[in-house]
Length: 400
Image (cartoon, rainbow, N blue to C red):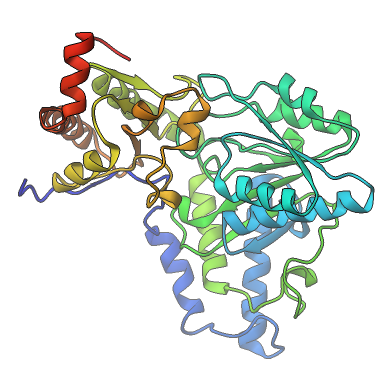
């Protein structure tokens, strides 16, 4: 318990700011601290830096610089895209939105809000592997549909959705398509034009940029209503003095994250698979989410007879930082809506463990994790009347 080792395995919640992103941002806190709306040298230097960052991000995503809008993060980007598309649809007599049951709460709660404003929302189910069937999306689209929003990769179980197929359906139906790509950016190859995506949300703190910065790609021709009224920033769409330092850091972090994604996928998926195979050796465990169509960094396993919060606290004592689901709702006692959506009963959903790794997690760290988790599970199960009852009643062995 006195082990000094610290292994961070919650990169899906947030990441450390990279050295390169930090170094790129620092001058804009000190020497180049000007307001980008000012006409003197410091202001114009800031404006040029923002333009260069916008162009860099656009080049990485395969779009025009004029189609990139900076925001405070993924939740804001999701809200702007969904509410904006809803308002545009309303002008044309279209008040129906299609999404899925296991989106991030930034999407689900926005849709729930719009339902209180007279909009209709269809929540498409996912299968037991956490995958959306494009045919279900197509069936849900109606003449009154103004938007389809489906996340690129799930933040809890890491499943990668058939985005190109869904985008193609939306284009044929002449319906706007938005994707929350917060978890996918930097982990999956993305070209918004080639994939037919109309709007895409991303967040800096998932890719080693600071918290509080993100972006929304909006395809040219989609004239979203203003998000914040006031000044002329973000081409009049989002008023407020620009967060110059974080914008610069975001562009650098995104460049690094997308530099060689195939090599990253190969490196991380080997460690991911070792973790999955090792943890599944514990009896009464199950992998959540498709084995292959998942992010290279994501491990999500349910462990029966163990309470998720207790598991996390004890792992933390051993220096392993992990999650039992979405960090955004970690204070909730309710089981993950994602795990319930793929058909898990409450009891099993409560005992989930999510490990989201980065290159900072070494092979030796993986060994340590695989040595530690069985010990922690045994300890917790030895104290659990639920586990004792399960074993007595069912004589359980193997996986769930």
